[in-house]
Amino acid sequence: MALLEIVHFPAPVLRKKTKLIIDFSDPKLAPLISDMAETMYDAPGVGLAANQIGLSLRLAVIDVDWKEEEGQKNLRVFINPILLEKSEDISFEEGCLSLPSLTAQTKRFNKVTVQYQDLKGTKKTLSAEGLLAVALQHETDHLDGKLYIDRLSSLKKELLIKKFKKLKEERKSSG
Ligand code: NI
Image (cartoon, rainbow, N blue to C red; front, side):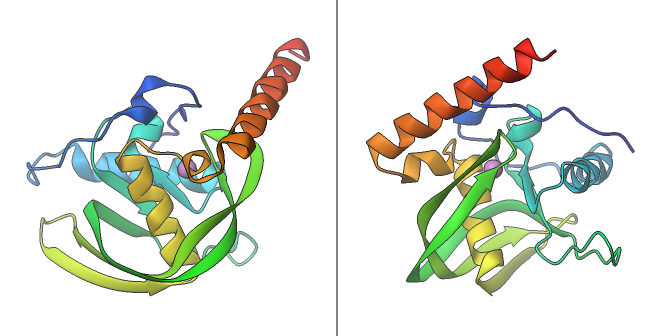
C-alpha cells in the first residue's frame, strides 16, 4: 500500500476524458484501488478519481460514510461508471482534492442511478441520493474531464481560480 500524489488544477490529465477499463484480470488493478483508497482517506476526502492521481482510467473510489474517530469505513469502488438517471435539483457546498482549500455552492441532482462494474468486471446498478449522489456526479465529472468549477457561472469560476492561484503562491512563499 502506498500514498499516491494528488494532481492539482490545472494539470492537463484532469481535463482529458478517461479510458474505459477493459482488462479485469490485470493484477495491478486491485493494488491501484487500495492505494487510491488509502490516498483518499489520508487526504481526507470522500472521493477520488483515477485521473486525480495522474492515471487516465475510468475508475473512482468513494466513501461518504467514513468517520475517522470511529474508524468505520464503507469503501465503494466504481469502475467504468455512467450515470443513467438524475432527478431533483439540490444546491451543494462542494470541494475537490485537486483544488485544495476551496469550496463553492454547486447545483446538482439529489438522486442518481449509476451503472458501473466491480473489480471482477460484473455490471452493477446503484441508486443513490444525497451526499453519495453528489459524490457520484463529482467523480463521473472528473472521469469525463470536468471539474466542479465548470458547473459555476463564469464569474464565480474565475474568482475561484484566482483564489486558488493566490493560495498556491502563498503556499510557495511560506515554503
Ligand atoms: Ni474532485
